[in-house]
Structure formats: C-alpha cells, structure tokens
Amino acid sequence: MRQSRKAPCTSTTPKSTLSAPSPPGPARPSPGEKEPLHRLVNPDKIEANRKKSIGECKKVWGDYTGSGLECDEYPFASTKEGSTKGDNRFSVRLIEGKDNRKGGERLNQVYTLNRILDGDPFYVKITD
Image (tube, rainbow, N blue to C red; front, side, top):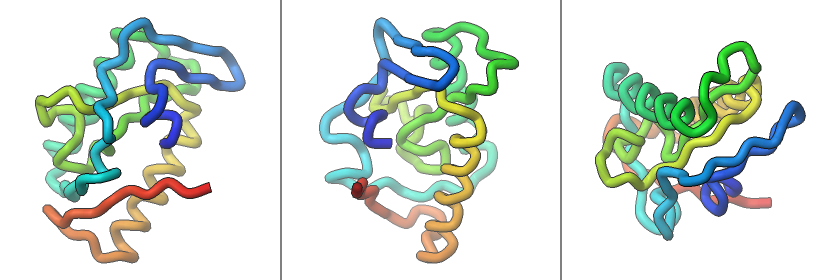
C-alpha cells in the first residue's frame, strides 16, 4: 500500500518488472491518510469500482490473463472513494493474485473487528 501511494506507476513482481508511463493517480495526500475513506457495502458499486480499476490496469499493462497477477487498487474498491468516484484520485498496479486476495481478506477482517459499517469513515495508517 505504501508503494501504491508513493509510486503507483511501477509494479515489481517476482516474474517481471512492469512500468506504466502515466498512472491515473495518486493525489497528495492520498485518500485515507489525512481525510477519511468511507465504507461501501453495495456489491454493484464495489464491482463497478473493480471493473474501472481493472480497465485501467489493462490500459497500462495490457492483457495479463494467465500471469497470476491481479489488479490492485487504492482507495479500496469497498470504499466510496474508489475509482468510480470521478475525481481520478486513485492508483492501480499489478500484484501477485494471492497477495491481492490476502489483502482483501485482511481488509474485511478490519471492517468486521472494528464494526465499520456502510458509510462509516476510517483512516489508513501504514506502519513498519
């Protein structure tokens, strides 16, 4: 996540190094850092965020089907600040699929354990 905030235009994977000439974001400061993100539970809106993010990944890196890579986005697809918000304050990058899925599982745990409901604000703090 730290890398997505600072340099969303590159992605390093064990298989390859990918670089993008012109990423769609990020804005400084990143959403969730100094201003809150807001939880989104509507599955259609979450899917719309994912579709737009995947479309941006495909524009930059082409068809990555079968590579084991997935399109990761920030802000998360499960937030109102996701890629369809319309302000172009988002970033995407290709990461290993298993890492992307594990990140989603952990994010859902955060939502559950902290009782973050639809529309609730929350911040993202990156620690070492």
